[in-house]
Structures are given as C-alpha cells and as structure tokens.
Length: 274
Length: 315
Image 1: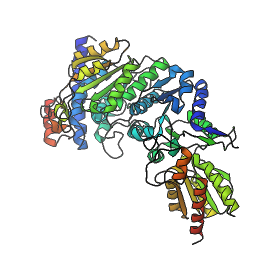
Image 2 (image 1 turned 90 degrees about the vertical axis):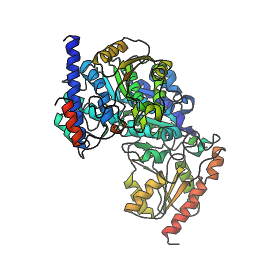
Image 3 (image 1 turned 180 degrees about the vertical axis):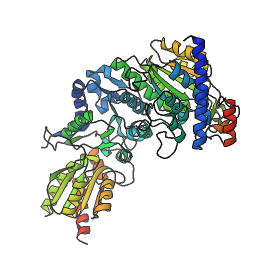
Image 4 (image 1 turned 120 degrees about the vertical axis):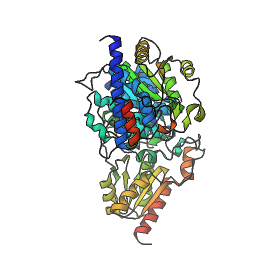
C-alpha cells in the first residue's frame, strides 16, 4: 500500500471511528465528546498505521503498547478497539451502562485490549515508563505510546515522570499530548497556562516535535522519526481542535463532558457522511 | 535477654536473597534506600534497582508499569509517603488495576522517634486497608518479615507491608512460614484476648505475663495479616475469652482496633478496648519514650485488659 492510499484509508477509518464515538456517546447520554474527537486521528494513526500487533494474538508479548492516560477519552479508544476486533462493535451501544464491558473510564478488568485502568489524570506516563523499563529488561523491542491531554499535564506527577523517562533514557517510549487548548473550566491559557509547552519537554531532556494532530501524514512521519531517536524519550505535541470533525463541537469548551443531543447527533452524522 | 532484629533490615536482606531466585524482581525506591534497606538489593542487582528520586507518586506509577510489563516490583519508601502521599496512585494504578506490585513501607508508627510527627505514619494501615484487592501485612518480628517478603514474591497481586525503624524482639523461630489470612495464637489463655500487630505483638506477650501474676489468663494473638483478617480466629477468641484488647502503633481508627471491632460488632459483640493512638499526631522523642507517652506499653495493654474484663463482668 503506498503512502497516499494509506493516508486516505486512515482518514476514512478516523471518520468511521468518529461516527462510532458520537453514536455511543449519544446512546450513553453522557461522556466526553470534545477530547474523544480531538484525539481520534492520533489514535487511528497509531493503532491502524503504526503500532505492531497481531490480530490473532492480542497478548503477543512483542506488541507495541498504548496507554490512554487521558482516560476520559475512552469512547475513542473503545471505537478503535472494537474496530480492531477486541470485542464486538455492538458493545459500543452499551457504553457507560450498568453491566457493560465499557466503563465510563477504561478498566482493563472489563475491556479486552485495554492495558491498565486510567481516568485519574497524570498517571499514564509513569506507567508507560515502567512498561518501557520492563521491555528493556526483558529484551523486548516493543514501543510504548502514551497519550495525554493538555490539561492533564497540569498534574505534578507528569513532571516527575518526565524526569524519570529522561533519566533512564527511555528511547522506546513516545508520548503524545493532545494539545486542543481547552479544559473543563475554559481555555488552558485562562485556567492554568501551559506555554511554552514544547520547550518544557525539551528542557526536561526529551526529543520534542510539534505536529498537526489531525494530519495523518504528519503524525505518521513523527512516529517514525521518534522511533529512530536513541538515548532519550520522545514527545509529540499534537496541535488539535477539540470536537474535531463536527462543526458544532469544534473548539467549544462546553462539549468537554457533554454527550450529543438528538439534534446534535443528527447534524454530526450528516457532517460525517453517515 | 531476647534477641532483637529490625524488620526493615530483614526485609532488605531477604529481598537481596530473592533477587537471585526471581529474575523478575525489580526494586524501586524514592531516595531512601539506606533507610528502607533496599540498598542490599541495589548493590547486588544494580540493573534491576530503580531510584526514582524524591517522587513517590511516580514511584507507584512506574512500579505499576513494570508489573504490567511482567516484572515483580517491590516499591519502598517511608510509610507516610507510600500510603499517604501516593495513596491515589496506589488506588488507581495498583489496587483498582489489581496489579502485581509489592509496596513495602518502612518507618511505620511512633517508633520512628526523633524525626517527629511529619514522619511517623499513624494512618497507613487505615489508608491501605480500605482499598479493595490490597493485602495488608504488619510483621511482628524479623522471622515473620522474612517469611512475608518471600510469600509476597510468589503471590500475584497488590500487597502493602509495613516495617519499622526500630529493632523488635524475636518471637518466631527461623523457619517461620506465613499463610495469607491466618493469624496465630502465641499464648493460650481464657480470660481475655490480647490482639496485636507489629511491635505491639511482643508488648501483648509481656502484658500477658504481667496479667498472669495478677491471676488473669490472657490469650495472645498476632494478627499480622491485617487484611484479609483471620475472622475465624478473632471470633473464636472472643467466644472463648469474652473480651478483647487490640494493640497497634497506629490510630485506633481504621487499623487493627477498627478491623477487630467491625468483625465482633457484626458477629459476636463483646467488650473491646483499643490500645493505640487517639486522634493526635506524633512528636519527636526516643522510641521508648514515645511508646510510654502514647500509652503503648505492656502495662497499658494490661490496664486495658482489666477494663475489658470489668466490662465482661458487668462492672
């Protein structure tokens, strides 16, 4: 498959994943719309365009690992995992329901394909570091990917982990920040300033890149570039738009944790071409 | 003279022994390896020892990731930082995840001594006991520490074990073995049950000797496996003796006193007196001085036994 075809295919998968996200959130009646949509292209690029995995062996020890540190964007992860065959897509209709395998935030005890529970922010990078150390000790060449939110990096623990990854030269780890510039209470610059964000990671000793987080081409190139970096961990600051893909939701603070109404759902489906 | 051993030192030495036996064991510390005694492992297995610096939250998260990657992490720091500062990391990434991390925290209780209230963990057992999936252990001496450390290495799941700064009298033989969920009877008696954890177990034995001279026969239990608690043994003792004293170097709320009272309150109410810290923080001082100050001596346990007996006899 040539690069152009690959990108077009990934874009179409992302469109379908967005449809699944909105559908599951609308049925659930609650959940995190904005961040799930801003992170969709990053997750699709990783799971369908980059990460090494075996469809017939989900626990293949050499698989690349993904930690969704911004656990509230579980709907995007679930839509991806269902499409990869970890569980039937019908399960998406039961998101957040009592007895469902799809909890409000990821829980590895319920959901095949989820590596570890997340949802309490700021913890995924430390977990990723531990995984990276374990892979190094065991001689596994797996790569560890951690996806964080931009508001999430206000947690102090993230910067403890930033020091650890650099100190232990974890070059088998790539972290991505979904830089959508919004958090629950407003714009990140108003709630708690993050800039200069990329420079902070650079100063902590990380290989740091900035990309358009909705460009499959840029994302794939960045993942490849990070893989060739030796002796330090890699950070990709992915500039995104919260609510990406549905004009109603784009760059709107209020859709952080609100599910689409019937009218919003209808318009979203029209825009996404369902 | 009863020989004394330090639970933290016995932990450190056992960990080093286990390092050869289990290539999956990794050890993490937060800049306190000389105090928690993980230094022995660090010297023997530098490739499998990770100093996380002064960063206990990251310590717990990294340990979780190592376990996820198939290793057996032992994460050590002071009890107040392991159970207190990093509590929510332990909850989310270790207990909720049901992941195979062993938290071995030193410097529990007032016997930390001179460092004072900031460093004396009097709440850690409560904080850990409330977490689903978590096993909570408080060894009473060196042999029990060695047995528990060996047990923890082969058990799959989250464990919290509290060690102490001071040395403790040796109670068990060198071949002591630990079994999950089992307390042990250290002395038989009919009038009152003395139930202890950690350094207070030996104090209970001393209290039983004092009580014997006063004509009171005391049964002494070591409930070192605080969670899951040996309900059957607690109930059996309450039925047999009709009153109970608990003793712990911890707040009387949330730890052993609470655990025993919960079982007895629901299943076999008898008079219970709790020896422990009563809603105050620690202060600086020598360990023995502090044990006296906070009413944690054998004499205090014996006095509590008399009160429990008075309750049983309706006085």
